[in-house]
Length: 278
Image 1 (cartoon, rainbow, N blue to C red):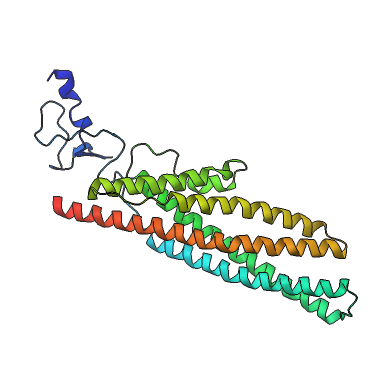
Image 2: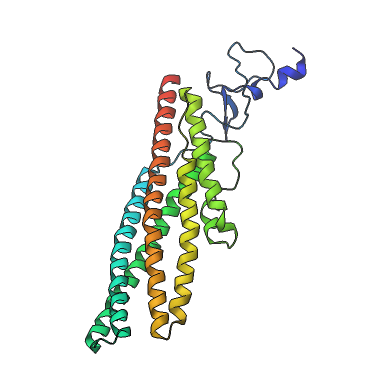
């Protein structure tokens, strides 16, 4: 082995991790990497992208995952209530269209119910968005602590949702990266194959895009509605949007649960390895 080869020996070994204070360390000896001599435990790291011991402290994310789930269940419940309310409004509008006598109190009660449901839905949606993005960003932060070459800065896990055009694909790519890389890290420790969640994530994201398009269409119809027929059409669009949202919320809950389970499992493996080494 030439001197140049010896200088990069530890850098190519899988038995190493990066400590931000001490530099490159050997995970077997917990000492500084030796770039001068050979090592009987050398194991070539072909991927050169993972750190088998986190370079930054892993932050707990299970509680955030639970709150994201709870808020999504709340959205599902208020969505069902909203669908029923929209159906009652649609039925009332049909009666007006067909010439049935509808009293002013009935119309006022309908408007009041729709207003309360709409405000409640908006509040819960904001809460759900906050809890979901907080969980999502923490999951990406933890992935950053475990890999040398993440696709994006961890801030994109939150910021990408709010930037037009970018929000159509980047959150999806980050979610796929979290799932893929977390699965790979588990495989490197367990030495067996872990099932990916790519199909589930793809279905969730497709429904997210479709739901957004339907919701924007329904909002425009409702905003511009002036005639009875226009109100009927906008109410129908709202109900269609709710029907798309129901499976979307269920898939979102499953995505959180699946990835959170992998996070928890990986953390347990890391803890076991740490106790074994110590």
